[in-house]
Amino acid sequence: MTRLAFIRFGWAAIVVLGILAVGACSSDPPGPTAAQAEATLKADIDWLVKSTHAKDVTVTDGGGEDIPCGEGKAKRTYGVAGVDTSSVDEPVIIFNMLTGGLGKRGYKVVSVDWEKPSNESIKNESRIRITVDSSRKKHFELSGETQCLRASL
Image 1 (cartoon, rainbow, N blue to C red):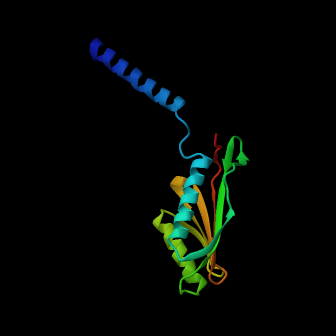
Image 2 (image 1 turned 90 degrees about the horizontal axis):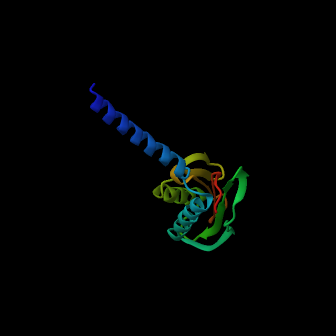
Image 3 (image 1 turned 30 degrees about the vertical axis):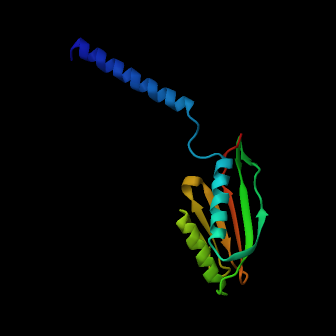
């Protein structure tokens, strides 16, 4: 290797390492803050309620506050309850309709209790978990929470 080629290679390596070091030190940790994840949580639940035959929808957990869950970290919550006005009377059908709607928003079911019926679904990229419960005839509850994330500023 000639001296000129060595100098060029050496400078290129220094520049690349410098860029990597600056990028690693100056960027925020990956993923949303608790408030950003909560905004997605609320949008997804509100969209689901609007896309169903629901009435008497009430907010059971308005969220909006950081709940400490670790050093400098927090989680947020949000929940609604309502009455389904479709001609369907079976809780499992309402349950399936709500679960399918969450699937359209990118959620994956992680656990199911067919006796209630209820389930938990997660949206990994947004770091959200939503529970669907339709154990009472014509009634449903949707409750969600974010993972323990960077606290909101």
